[in-house]
Image (cartoon, rainbow, N blue to C red; front, top):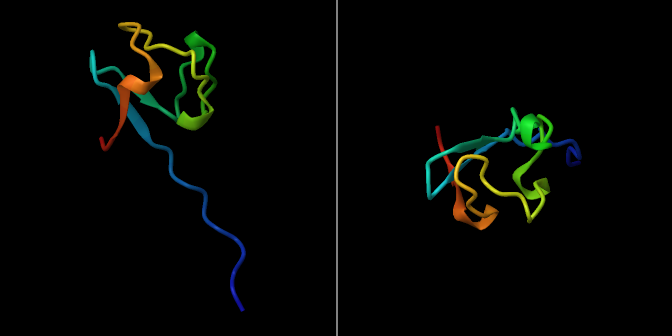
Length: 64
């Protein structure tokens, strides 16, 4: 018998490769319309870095 329940995935952080700004999934970016708890894959494709205007594709997963 297998357990069908899975632990929720921990929140991750993503860093802008242009300016170093960090997007934290747990915190979101409420001032930019992204509520806390928003996973990176759920951030709209047209969203840009609030610090430098870099595109979402200019971010990489980071460990902090």
